[in-house]
Image (tube, rainbow, N blue to C red; front, side, top):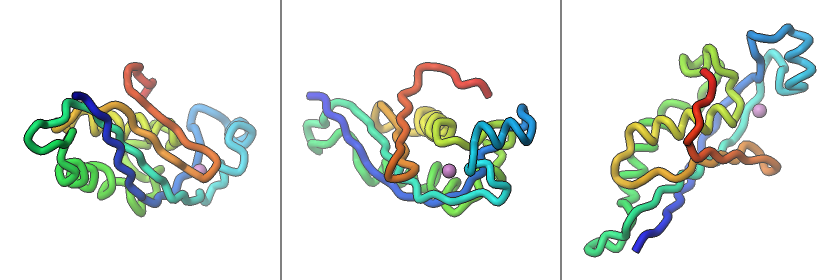
Length: 140
Ligand code: NI
């Protein structure tokens, strides 16, 4: 029996959407108020979905202690309360939530071995959310 497990995590971070590949005017036209030089913050809701066979002994896809421990160290400790633009991961990548989703997916994909990673979703605001399921390279 295979099942999916989705766990939600909260973190807060700020960002400014700005691409060095574009002029200031193009950035303003492209990103609008998200290009504000002082940035702005979000309370992100991260959803991590994993799948796998339900262990006959434990009845679980994976132990939440393992998932929570990994996400805490690899994701939350890294991104919570940060200015995303200041992180090495985003020196050449615009910290959109699309890019953040794929970055978090790659970190989990590489390091979390207790279950198969299906998707990473991020709710940025009440009005928009993003989902990434791997499979295609994003230009870095
Ligand atoms: Ni934003």
